[in-house]
Every structure is written in C-alpha cells, then in structure tokens.
Amino acid sequence: MERDSYFDTLKWVLIVLVVYGHMISHCYYVGGTFSLAMYNTIYSFHMPLFVFLSGRYSQMSDRKKYLSGILRLLQPYLLFQLLHMLYQMHQGGDFSVVQLLFWPIYIMWYLMSLILWRTIVYFAGGNFMARYPKAVIALSFVIAMVVGWIKIELPLSIRPTLSFLPFFILGYYSVKIDLKQRVRKVPLWAAVAVVLAVFACFYFLLNRNMRVVFASFVYRTPLDVALRAAYLFVAMVMSVAVMRIVPGGKRMAQWGRRTLFTYLWHPFVMFFILWLPVPKASDLWPVLYSAISVALLTWLSCYEFPNRLLTPITSWLKRK
Image 1: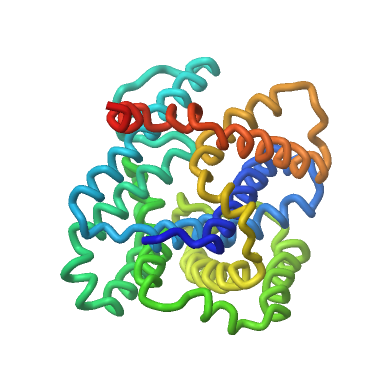
Image 2: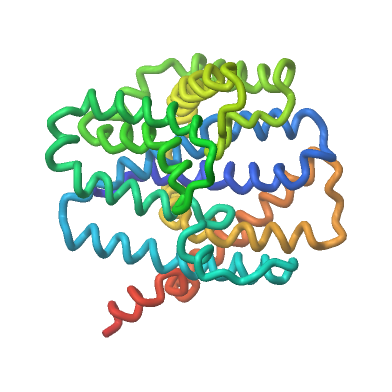
C-alpha cells in the first residue's frame, strides 16, 4: 500500500502523544490534576488509533512480503528486549531467556502484537476475513471484551493483542473506503468538542488512574465490564475526532515515516532524563521533557546508520 502524507502526519502526532503519556506516567503522581487528566485523555485513544493505522498498512496476502515483514519486526524486538533486560539487571533484576523470547518488556508488547496481528490476517485474510467482514469485526469486539475475564498472565503479549484486536481489524478493512473523505465529513467544531468533553470528564469527574485504558485491564467487578465497553466506544469516537483535527503536512509526514525509531528509543531517553536531578513536580515538566525527547530522536532518525541498527540482518542482506 502506498504511503499517504496525511496518515504519516497522524503517526507522528501519535508518537509525540505516546512519549508525552509515558513521561506523565513517571511524573503525574507529584503533578497536578491537569497531567492526570491529560494522561487519561491520551490513553483513551492513542494506542487504539496507532493499532488502527497498523491494521491499515497490514495487507499480508503475499508470502514473501509477510515473511520479510516479520523478520523486520523480530530484529528490533529481540534487540530492544535485550536492552530492556540489561536495564532491569542494572536495577537488580535477573537475566532470563524465557522472558527475553516470550514475555515482552514495557513497550515491546506492541511489536509482538503486531507480529501476531499480521500472522492472523496473513492466514485468514484471503478467505474467512474476506468473506465475512461483519462477522469478523463483531467477533473481534467480543474477544476484546472476553479477554478481560482471563485472570492468568499470558505470554507473547496475547492480552493486549486481543484487547486491541478490533482496532486492528477495523484498520485492516478501512483500505476499502476513502477514509479521509469520510473523516472530513465530520464538522471540525464537533471533533474539537468531543476531545474537550472527554478531557473535561477526566479532569472534573474521573481524575484518577483509570485502569480501563490499559491493555492489561482485568475485570474485578461487573462494573469493569461496562467500563471496558465504554472505553471501546470512547476510543473509536476519540480516534475519529483526532483524525479530523490533525492536519496534513509534508514535514511532519517525513517524521511520521520513522516513528518506530522514536518508539523504541524513547524509554531510554526518558529514563536518562528522569535519572538526572531535574524538576519533576509540575505539569510543565512532562511537556518539556517530552519535547526534548521527541526532538532528539526525530533528529537522530533522519540518519541512515541509527536506522540500520534497528534491523541489522535486513540491512546487511540489502548490502550484499
């Protein structure tokens, strides 16, 4: 599928929000209610929308394309799993081959989930998914609801894979429609009003850590089931609103083509910043530290060598 500057711009906006959300998660306990409301608002849509875009660019009918894509994901997965494990060992943890291979650490769940999602559409996309799109979409929502009842720990990021499955499936099918044209039909004022309303709700009514916005969400009470259903609905509405608000732009689109680099490296930049004796107890600092992190990593991603390090095997094979 050909790249589209609008969706690349959207990806860059989302990666900025990912970094900001993670920075808040390490600072908001000592910050004000604004940071916590921003945190919940961002988490209400940013990963569902990211997963949606991943589904849109995951037409996996060709065997060679599928295998090369999986290889390109496995390389950074293993590399950054190892880096995260080394960081954990520095903090007093132990090395484990089982964890390295089967238990994604921190943000690494997304790469493993992407491997699983693309495997699903590769094997099922050409027959069952093509024949019964409505049934597949409905089934994905049922699965996303049911996974919350599973209490045991699941390897290979199975829980977030199933929790976000509806958004990937919707993205996969979205190639059949003119998505940009559909989104433009939404009045801009309505999209802005939706985002402000959700933020106001988190600021004035739900200004606490909302477990429901996490892919690891496990039901504890019957109310949690209703909250999960509400989250799926809000995530879809917020995703449409954000898509309507985000403008196009060639500069941001160029940055958006390299979001994987920023996604993988930003935890280490964040850990370094938070390790320094710098102020944290304010709503301002997560914004500032996020801007520094994104600016640094966006600049580094413009160079070929750092990008080659993400996929050393693929880069070596291309040079042969």
